[in-house]
Length: 124
Image (tube, rainbow, N blue to C red; front, top):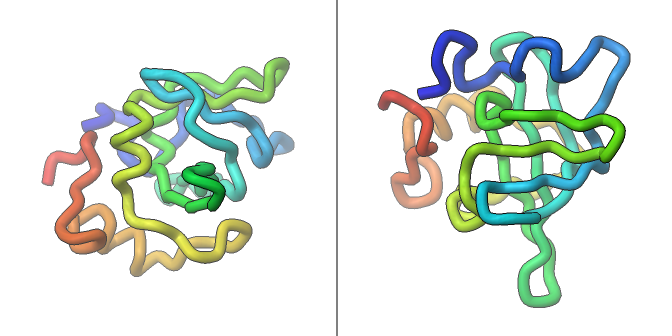
């Protein structure tokens, strides 16, 4: 669980109303994992779509904003508290530069997508 701020909320003060993390590098616990293709900043519904290159192709994965531990705007880097393998195990999102449907997020949170995948930081 991500604590008081919830699974779908960025850390307080990490992204201002006039800031974006689109195009930022994503660093996981075990190193660089991809680039932010899309982000939604709506309070309680925030997430990233991370594009990961794998064997000459790209896949796009939804990451709840609650996984973000740090945003470094000077370095254009977002740090998340999961491993690259955990991030790559999330269900794919097929439209990297488009908002994610709320039904997808609801199913994601309940572990109903991707063969029963459950995000590591939920209490489901």
